[in-house]
Length: 217
Image 1 (cartoon, rainbow, N blue to C red):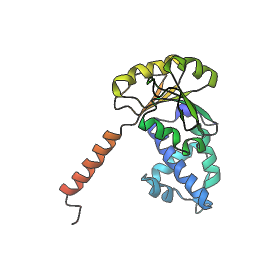
Image 2: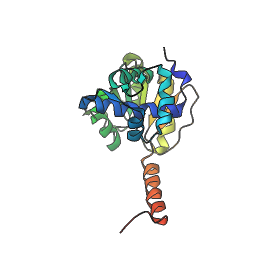
Image 3: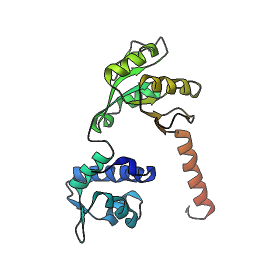
């Protein structure tokens, strides 16, 4: 039995990359994959791939590689994807609506069970099959729906208050789309998704390649 607490966060992120590749290959009907092929498709060195996957025991075979179905199942179990995670969303603006309408969340085991907003004009509307609720119903709904994950899609000045409200309601993990870092107790898992930061990094990479003379006209 793999104990996820023994897996470091960087390793966990790589495991997630491996899982996405394996999922695509399963859909294509591929049966096996080598560490070199998996590394090539994820940008990870093949030696690191073998080291990461060694925690599963002897799944890989010399000259054959890893059976994709077996490895896919092991990774899903390790990452907690072998169960359905009930999630709530706070913030039914443009980003929140897009998140609720994204079909792959449900396909991958993430089920939106409730959505909240403080805008009176938005409360009561039906979006992606969910009736938008007022924040006053957050704690009760989280308990009733047994939600463990919370997504934040609110302006930065409201994000900290919303995060603490989710935490107080019993949410254990937060995916934060507000452009502000959240500083919460260690027992609350937080992943920050900053679109601006990602674009700045992309612009930097392009600028750097230009300075190094790697781009061509």
